[in-house]
Length: 326
Image (cartoon, rainbow, N blue to C red; front, side):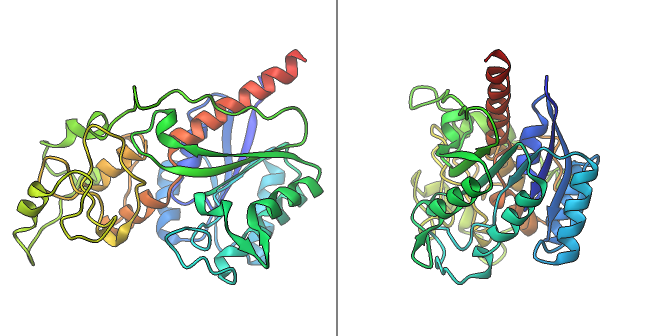
């Protein structure tokens, strides 16, 4: 079986790396992340990966990524290009510098010429324009111009077994062969629910090293009662997605940082802990967030669900098998 040597760009705390590493045949050898807190968590959980910490727009950082990737024979590149400029919940400003980082991604692809390249991004990418051109079409054309065949899908995490209705655009580009996509395994009849994912945590004691940390409501001690009395799918504070109370018998909405106003628990009369949100994101329990609670919320909300990375990795192996049989 072919071994893929992976470079993970814009790696965050390592959701995509975690998912791919759960599939035999993938070795995450190099990663890049600019945020020091996310880099710390990545390093703690991927100790065998060379992490190049720094700004990808810096020539020195870019050269370090390229040099390390060549030395380690990288043949697959993944990248969750920062999505703030494309997100439906953001300003969608085409001049946002975070919307220019795709150029650095493609410079690295052009230099390394990996066999396979993958981009993950928010649903808003489908309608985002840059200088009058649809960004998705632009990226597909850029792949084509570099000699890649490419395709995209809007993947909903709940349809592959995650307890969360998170939708993400995935682009896969290949030098040779056909592109296979993961087969959907779940729907309304067998979704993994919020309760399936976290019910065993509702009564256990606080465990700070494991990020099962509880909020203290000093400023408003009535919040727990407000949460208990709030209907499923609503917010006790009345602000849209902030403080959303999850229905235990459905997958959750998209896990976001929400500046700490994260989901509230369906039964316990409190906000969910970082560990519970990590469960909804399909992080394994041995993944440690050795940072403060606010940073943990941010990194969990920004991450690629590891399960999506895993099923994409498994689909890549079926592509390789198909090529062998051809």
